[in-house]
Length: 144
Ligand SMILES: [Ca+2]
Image 1 (cartoon, helix red, strand yellow):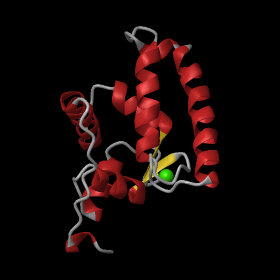
Image 2 (cartoon, helix red, strand yellow):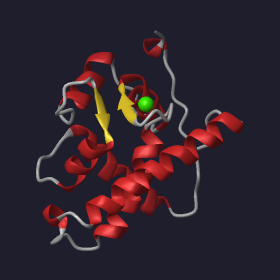
Image 3 (cartoon, protein in one colour):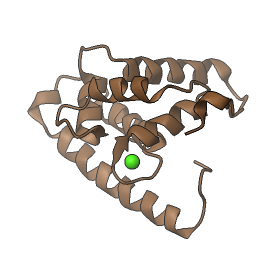
Image 4 (cartoon, protein in one colour):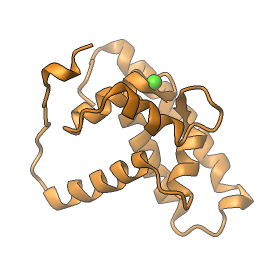
């Protein structure tokens, strides 16, 4: 989260964490999810992932957020690919993924590209252990 330091960013981050914590609390009490093992821990990690992907911290993962997040992961995608990834998850058809949709995706049975990326990334992080490197692959095709 070293992307855009400064006071404003810190405040936004705090605000969104409070908001997502509230949603997590509601979800923990939701009958729909009561059978899921370690739900609290899972929701906590989903919250962190969501924030990692919501680059501008406005509460939804839009196409520009996803573009930057995928670049951070060293997996740049075309606009079309990004839109496809979002539309797989975006039930409200707003061309962005809100937190509830994100949770439904992570807990749901459906396999989406974004979910695969997240699962793969978690595993890669574990395998990587202490080593911390930020892939910064950019190419001419990524220019707007
Ligand atoms: Ca956003």
